Length: 468
Image 1 (cartoon, one colour):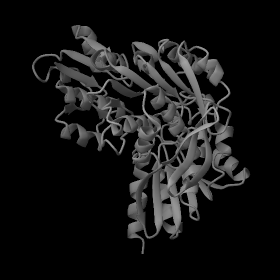
Image 2 (cartoon, rainbow, N blue to C red; image 1 turned 180 degrees about the vertical axis):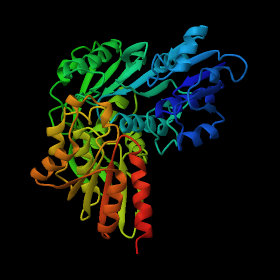
Image 3 (tube, one colour; image 1 turned 90 degrees about the vertical axis):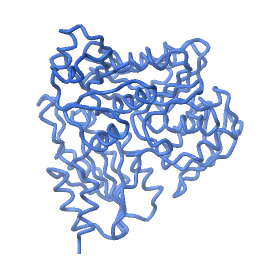
Image 4 (cartoon, rainbow, N blue to C red; image 1 turned 30 degrees about the vertical axis):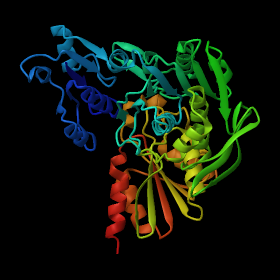
């Protein structure tokens, strides 16, 4: 079958294209802009793509595709979407296609939540794979253990990152409602995606619906760190077990050691020790993610030894505490953090993993929520673990209604008032120019953005390399 993807260059859609190709379909697609690394990946997979969007892209082969998959970046007025409707070409959303083509007959294991979805999903898939369960996988990142954001296994489990963002222009419900969860992890729900959710209650309603989807004989591991966990878990008909590092829960971590090795701790269930383990990821938040994986994998029938071995073998995820390089003693790290909780936890994790280094946190408030006023006060207290914070002016701020916009300059001032030295700068390039002349051997730069950040990390490394 020839399947055509509108919005093929997105992280999730690109991985889905690779998964379809692996299944044996003829795959092509289009996007407004297609840049490396996704352009290189698509070529490596033998997938044809077109840019920009044009109605005649659908007819390049002389006949229309058998099925079109419409990404959630596509609007109704898109010329290719218009052509699909005009010509009556069969088309569905990405989650619908995933459900119909891959999830029927599989045991769907879904990781949902505001924070840590990509890392937790990747950890879970690695544990199942290491234990010989041969899972399938689709995740919105690139796990280093697999080299791609997808995997087509022969085992019964399909491991998915469950996104609460909307599905398509013709389906405004969250994506994860299509994923048929049988086993699930919910890492917690704090307000996010302010462009589609009006408030926390509206945001929580998606997770309530998700929890209600899990069948009575399924399983839910619920993070108990956030106050609303009981409200959300109350919608589940299945067995629920809680996990937390900070609060009372059934699955807990004890005798915690954090350092350059990652995390070492004892896993306990209802106070009884199961095993002392090592997970090579930094930060208490990733320790907590590991507990969620432990709970889910025990429910799936894995032994403590199997889970511990899989967690120890995990090598990480691109753009999650990823070392981009070290030049002249300056270490440059990339992370996807953009919510204030994620920023705070990531800074703490990096500080614990690299003790003794002066940590410079560089942040682009780029997401639809980060560019708004919603978390302005929380961000002011999220940089306390850094020696200095540099805040970049978001390039897409004009897309946010003026009355709702956050103020990046004021944010830098607020951070400074909270006790951390901070500066606002007009662009990533301005930050590169400033840091290239200021950084000293032993410094660590943590660049955080949910986008490409104008190539900040690579530009900084080149600038440091050319510095005399």
